Image (tube, rainbow, N blue to C red; front, side):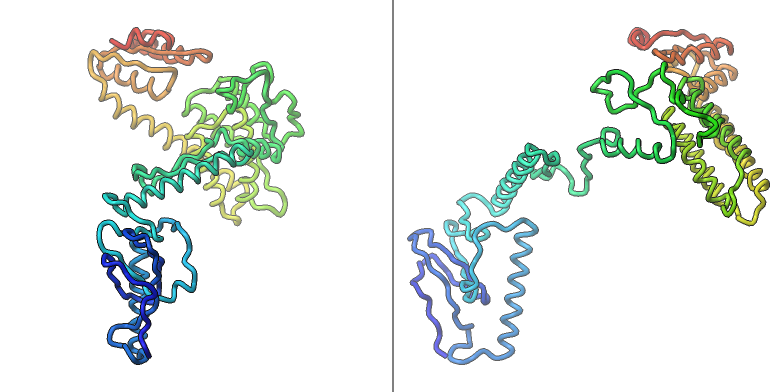
Length: 416
């Protein structure tokens, strides 16, 4: 078979490299004349058809070159004009010399610039176009545009980006939080008066309008012990993490005592569902603390572990005993262990500044004074609750020297 010759003469600066059945359209940088490479026979196969082994070898070379091009390009999007199918039946050419280097898709690389710099420039241009499109969508009422990733590599690829809206500000979440109490027949807190835009996402509280103002206790699904506890939470009569948790567990003991399993139901399933509206009501009164969440998880685990073969009175007695153990081990004994370890950090002559009221902090200070450590305490407080007064009374009653001031004056005592 006669060998096919190139359609046009080649410039002396061009060097041919036969590497398969793909082709590309090249432009001569010096003369400006274009040429197209056509299929030429493999070396050693002139004047005869290729054997099966030569065809297999040709396929392997094509696959290797294709794999090599993919590794060089990486995952970056391809740009430029597409090569037609008729042009892809010939051979490829490689240009030699610094002035005739080609980038991806036939782009000429200027002298002094590498392929990596050109790829970074193309990537930056594409991301700028993408950000512009997202900005136009946002102007048309679409979702807010997201920040495009940095092209300098300063942000690690595995770092998660923060959402555009925080969980508290999400309007869909707020609607869900309102629907859940309504589905459970729990009264929801209403908004009263005007709101400050900075704190508009927070629930608004009014002392004049109680959460239970329009609640009918006999026909309500909320247990009276939970209603009483929720009102004490909202009015600030029970404050402090440990005190609120213990009050919740005592109210749950009363709920378990008054509970009766309905017919054709199991205590381990029905009681858990019965407690859900109670917890929703307490959350409407005041958001739960971390210790209260832990106590609720513990009680739910104990309830689901109750065997269906046990009598109701026996199961309720075990649940009340489990609550007593939780209070003793997780709250009382834990506070003792913390105070015994923490008071050793106090030295003679220290001036300790505390804010508000914490039963555990007061216990640590009193125990340190009892153990012979001599120090002074400054209690900082703020309106409207003024909980620091309780800390001041307990310290003075224990003989600990203490002074009291509001938070605007805290800067005057910091040098001490």
